[in-house]
Image 1 (spheres, rainbow, N blue to C red):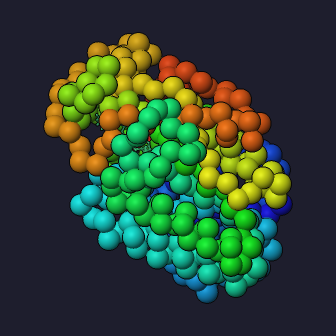
Image 2: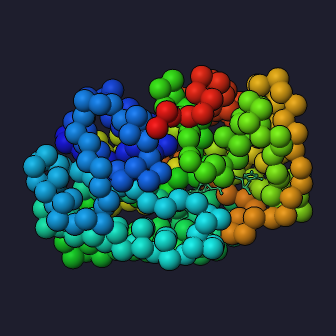
Image 3: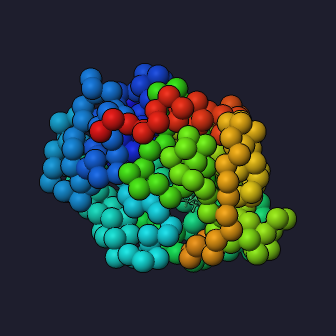
Length: 326
Ligand code: UFG
């Protein structure tokens, strides 16, 4: 199967590309390299440095590479930025996403796997969050991803587009080759590890009075390789199981303080932490029920435990102190 990966030079994208190549898929990548890194993509696969909003160009890529399916991971991803710059989220995730869908419709490409998010659930009414849980985003990021999912419903009804939306919980960890490097880092695990490397003097804990076991936010951290394998199984099975909206987490929640503690154990560094104000747009708890996804996609996580996840991230960060060279 010939697959076009949008956002394939990003953190999750680069690992999805790595796994697709291991599993012998034919892979092309489109990425505008605003957040992604050219060196995260092998030099010998077709790479198009462009924005997904360039409909005519995307249509040419789809046609000339005889693409059978798109894995759509390009987009804006930061909860906090979406609260101050919501326009970027509606432009990047909704408008440009629509241009991509139009390029696909015009090229008769009928399969899409979409990187969606747990952020579309908002503050959970119950946990773990299953696929029947209502969607009620409390940040513009989650809203923009939900809007794209809703567009997929209409493209399915009207044009027969088949889709699998994978609603990621918190992607974390690294493979030997690929890890997490954002130009401006806001994510907990890389910030904690940068502190252990001496690149920061402390970690801020955003909020200590949430209604959780230790007052800090709880998240479901899923290893990026397990996350990538879900895309591969979704591609293989989507003609039989689609359309689907699936939650993709580990089913286990860890608080901010527990993640810091795990990193202290693994790195042997004291990792100083300070209590800070809540970050706007953060739900208290996001934990997935992953049963449906695991049974539909036949998945068994390779890294089910937070220490294993943090260890792989630490291995990568210790070898790549400043991330990718570019
Ligand atoms: N946090 C801190 N200090 C930091 C950074 C983060 O306390 O320096 C806290 C956050 O407040 C949050 C938790 O650590 O409670 C995790 O924060 P991240 O920024 O690592 O991740 P988010 O939960 O905000 O968001 C991630 C992805 C989203 C996705 C979401 C779904 O970035 O794309 O998980 O759960 F939607």
